[in-house]
Length: 58
Image (spheres, rainbow, N blue to C red):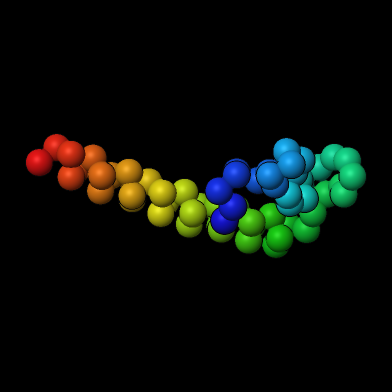
């Protein structure tokens, strides 16, 4: 997943949003895949934060 949370370095959306300009609705399967990728990335980041907290608490 992208480290800029769904935006490219120039500031505009890097992926298609479920509704709205300019792409309209995306297929349900694509939205599910996109959200699963975000979940994996966020879980990985959270695991890193938890590991660092444990390291600092010792």
